[in-house]
Image (tube, rainbow, N blue to C red; front, side):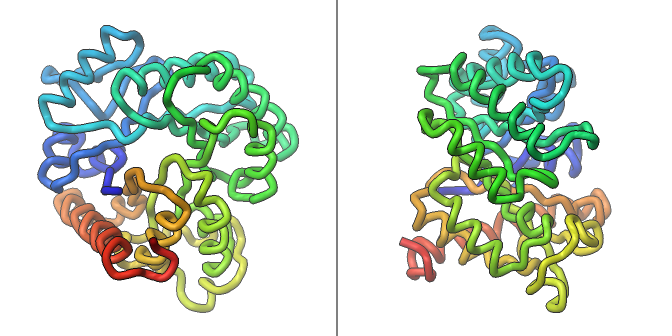
Length: 302
């Protein structure tokens, strides 16, 4: 278990120095955003153009670029919408991402259950998602790459929604969760319930996004409206209500040993010249939590 960082976070520091800043932070693993045209907007060639995973040749170029920088890929990220009118194209996108992940040596592809059409209800989105994610699984059968469905948005932070997804794909153990620590909290679950959900889904976790929120006590312990004051209270990892040592301990108990991927959505509150230092604090806080959970018997750790 070690630390990774989303490339989009590094781009908020300086989009021209994503890999250099990763190295300066002492982190060797990155989650890479893959767009619908298979470009990687935040991981670029020496001439400044985006790298790509559109085919094996392009992916090999990216692999050599990362190897030259001493960087490994913790995950690929695709922002799928399987409830849209372009769902079949999104399936193709995800299928290619799975193959590219295998070519890059990445263990997982983050899949998005978020739908962009607000007129659709939870049931409609769930049916569409299950049908199309199953298609991705069928078309990539035999590829040793997992799919991590993120608990993302107003539906997929509901345990009933997640339980239906996992029940529908119970025959393929590659389907699991990109567990986002902050999203359950953002959704309005009280902090005690967040820890319960981390425990409930820890064994399903294939990948993580780790972020934090610093709600005042009168909000932290009760249910809230979805997204209530998130922009105001989102914060670096070392300032929030979620106890990182407890989070790491829960995940280790559940058998999770892959990277913990930093997703700091509070970076925009800081001046550009301050952001690398803020990410450095995140790295330090998360590594301290990992070390404590491994060596000091943090409650819930193994």
